[in-house]
Image 1 (cartoon, rainbow, N blue to C red):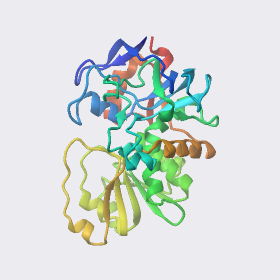
Image 2 (cartoon, rainbow, N blue to C red):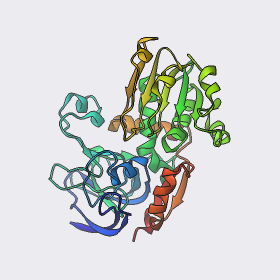
Image 3 (cartoon, rainbow, N blue to C red):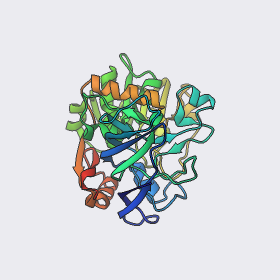
Image 4 (cartoon, one colour):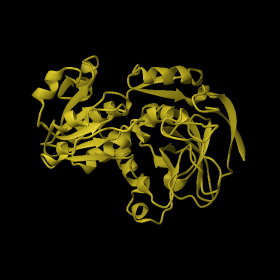
Length: 347
């Protein structure tokens, strides 16, 4: 076992604090990664505060990890020491179910293992990226292309794949009108990716405060959802609406913005249940759906796609001592657009 410094929530809703954790010895198919950067995802806050249900403490959050391979197990064939790598939301799965065999490990029915707030097959709790090092099976480790710097690559491991996967699945591209609901950590990546895929992109945000940013990142149009005229003007407009917000919505109002056969896809996960009038989907044969991250193969595809198009996330780099402040700023929508921890400050 290797002892490393990390930042952990000792209990639900408690401030994160410096601590030490044990990382397992490198096994045959493991890679030891020196973490360089770790993104702060809104889901870290949901889980550290038990917003999505009972959690495991102490909790070391972080599933947007970018770093350098420091050691490899004897059976590792995919990576070597010095490689630039990333780790996302999954560090293991059953590898045998239909979903795993189809490259959809994120929907593993036999027991997927989250990067943190989960229990591995060895019975030990998993700890995430707010730490100096992590040991991960090579099959759940991603290669970060040379075209993306590690700091802006880190958020791609959750925010990037969480938006890329549904945009690809619902065929965002030339001739399609796509709306991205919310201009935060996920939403800004949704805008970049939908634009790069060739879709006509509209941002739906509570206000016009981030309009200039949205247009700069690739949006063709930008509307405020606080303006009732928006819902009149855009009725029946979109093939796809990607909702990245984690607050309850008036789903009936947003479903009315879809064309016939359009889809409203949730990647933001509110802590409270939402209400729906089923006539909102019956009229127009509309789809209300959800999507969760992506499989390992698709995540690598996303990283390569972003590198080919020359972009990563828009970030604000912080030190580990600023994590608790960053959590409050995320909740206040006061970040453009993803906090990333410089892991050199975790010491």
